[in-house]
Figure 1 (tube, rainbow over the protein chains, first blue to last red):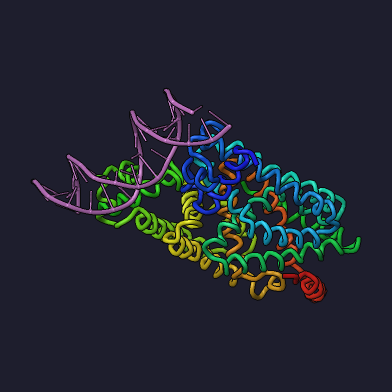
Figure 2: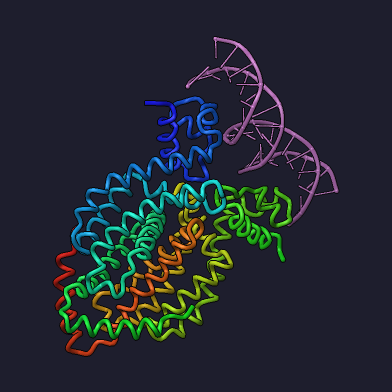
Length: 212
Length: 212
DNA sequence: GTCTATAGCTGGATAGAC
DNA sequence: GTCTATCCAGCTATAGAC
């Protein structure tokens, strides 16, 4: 394995263990088992290494789910895959890494673009599935695929961080969301008469809602 | 204003400006306009100062919304207040501070308890309102107040971080969630016959969903 | 490409004068 | 309570030997 790759893996592991506030050329190099000066030889700055690690990790994980996402055939299946993905990535610590990088990107402009790109990789993937499942179902009335894809990505990050300090609270949140999502099933199975009624009602309610 | 208070305010401002990775006794003291050694005299360690700042800021902001939350009379109104709160706190940077502290708490055990307590202050408040609005409405079938309160808190954090690197994506996410929430209005206005039908359907769908 | 060594800085934390 | 002065660890980044 190349030194560059070892540094990237070391960076990801160092973020997992020490958080964004605890990563440094020294901690990363120690984790990777290489000399500290090589961080600067290969990447120039620590932030550039973090950016490279962010991109590499995301490309890898998104690719790992592409097939499973393509096989999803209903909202029910998508929700199940979502919970599976949450459990799996939580265990591997990938969402945690992305969350730390996202927190760091708030005040470090050089991290903002790579982190945005990583989030877009995920949300584009989710958006494609949502379009396929939702666009010609009754849910289309209330579901904007692009916006929801971003919301799902943000929720994954938020829940991961929440879980770090309040695991029971995060569990309860996931349960509650799954329960609420049952509504989508109900709408999806609606007959034509009920669909028309729903459309009428959502149009009205949507009009009342638009405030800002 | 006491030195302790100036340090707390300085800590909050320093987190806003430099992020959790950039706060130090020196940056905080400089922001507060006091001597660096006073951080340790008054709080012992930097983390203990951050913990105190976390608690103070949250108590302050939760109190600022208590009246408005008590005045909420419908899910529609709650959603509108939520978007108002998001805009207001985003501008003041309070959610951003909580998000940074939450990120730091993932790897700093001394921050975990205070941050969990802060999140609970918010979610308890939200849970109380949800109980009041939802418990004897048809939505109760699909809405667990306690779990949803945690979900809402986590979503606020996730969206705030998302907004920091992708404002357009975060806007789209909020729009999409508001649109989806229209479903709740629809269910809330359901007649008794439709309510019974919904209950039957959610029971079945809920049974199929329980996987992990 | 990789190593040692080091410059120059910022970090937490304390001692001791006032 | 507040200040100066200081210790020492850790930080980024570079120079230069191999």
